[in-house]
Image (cartoon, rainbow, N blue to C red; front, side, top):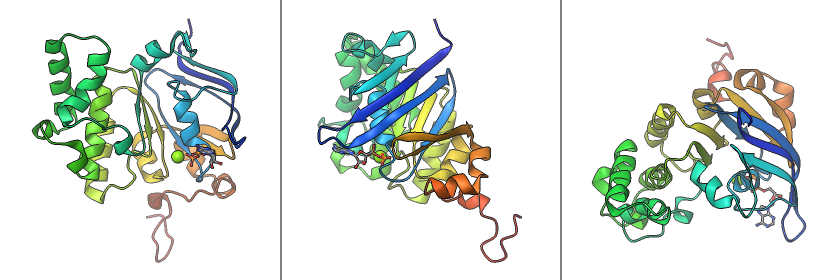
Length: 251
Ligand SMILES: Nc1ncnc2c1ncn2[C@@H]1O[C@H](COP(=O)(O)OP(=O)(O)O)[C@@H](O)[C@H]1O
Ligand SMILES: [Mg+2]
């Protein structure tokens, strides 16, 4: 047994049109770590995340989650461990009420109706949207949808939360509230994002992707202090590390 909860080894993936989206990605993540995946558009972040619970099958290489090598036989077990929050909540929410969306996962896992209700209520309360439970998800704001999407994953009690661009499309207040919410979770977190200021708040470690490969992996503040690396990866320093916009002083 390994102490790493996620192990990705030389992962390669070509889309059916032969686009080489991942060209040999390797990393390991320990229990309780909070890790950002950053990189320019098209770097391969979303493709990588979609491998972590078996939505995509590697062209080559391996993914291991906890004790399970990810294979068609273990994918069900892996999906109990890895909760995936998609970039677009509309890809995640498809039932006619918020309650039913959050109940969908636990029902599929075979919990009793009482347990399902308890799980839904707890998940909705955790993300602060209990009052929306009878509303149709497609009528909610982006921030509300994002919270419901997170609840629909929390209701399955995953160990690992994988999130693709969780702050995209949120207004500043909803973004700050989301960051506070995510900070309060003790799960292992893997977050693909362009929001480098959010990364500073949430992730002690950052993996940089460039053109289907990992170009750096290390402590977030070290990565974000490396101007050459950021430029080569088409990234810009988080605003709070850019100093005063008028005089460029750091204070
Ligand atoms: N469904 C798809 N079919 C073909 N190519 C795709 C598809 N989705 C993504 N790609 C390509 O794979 C590469 C990686 O994309 P993606 O994982 O979405 O990057 P990111 O999330 O970092 O923006 C890009 O070249 C992109 O154009
Ligand atoms: Mg993406």
